[in-house]
Image (cartoon, rainbow, N blue to C red; front, side, top):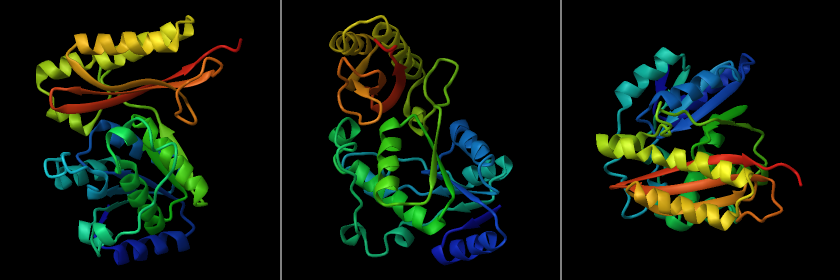
Length: 284
């Protein structure tokens, strides 16, 4: 596996692969890799002749009071995991390589509507940072395929719209969330949880499952949302949002909508967790 930190070297290596007719699949990450990330790399091998993984802790998507400085940076361990998994190339640039003129002088990519609710409302500017860095990485790698985990469903919808609006010739693949045996979605931030918090955090996914059953049984959207928030609070969560949405637009679901997603974010102690679950209702 090649490990590169500079754009010029990345482009040189990828040009060689393209001249040889190889298809490129990319898996963008912020590092501190867990088995969910490795699953993405394994899936990427089914869609590309070479797999590029990027590790970049993107300062543009962190707010002033968020955990940028505390975010785990485990490059040596990550590289070993990626090599074992069969990754072809790891691009791990410093901040100065991606934002040479600083964040204040950086052109920003903003995706309207789909980025404005949910995490977009709770973390102002977050999805501008995501869209900007992903668009830069897409321009640098120029992949045929890009793979993202669906744990952050809103992020995937934001990137999907960005790719369509900016005419990137890239196939996006969303990969189902990988979970612990308790149902807790795998996340780099799970490492912040105490053992007791981690046990209680599994209630988030259990609540999503119960909400899906209730919706499919005909319960009202408002009632389902309200009951779920109470259940999360009883488990020790501080809910940020719990919203039943149209799966494509992420607007609040209407009673006529059939293809839904439940989006949830809640604090367990000092750790903010997100999760989601798709819900398909039968046609009336």
